[in-house]
Image 1: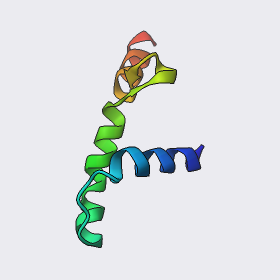
Image 2: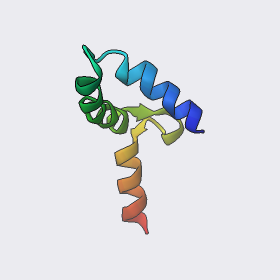
Image 3: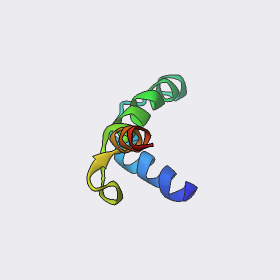
Image 4: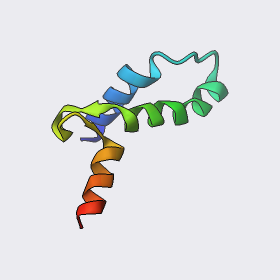
Length: 60
């Protein structure tokens, strides 16, 4: 599961960011993770991870 997560984040979110050197690239990881959290996911019925967690928390 971890390998899959890293692959998705690298390919879909980090690859599109401007990364002139290590420090800016590391600081932009927060942007990549925010994009990841907001993206719809097929296994979650096209809801974002945030929407899914919010719905799960509301139903308990």
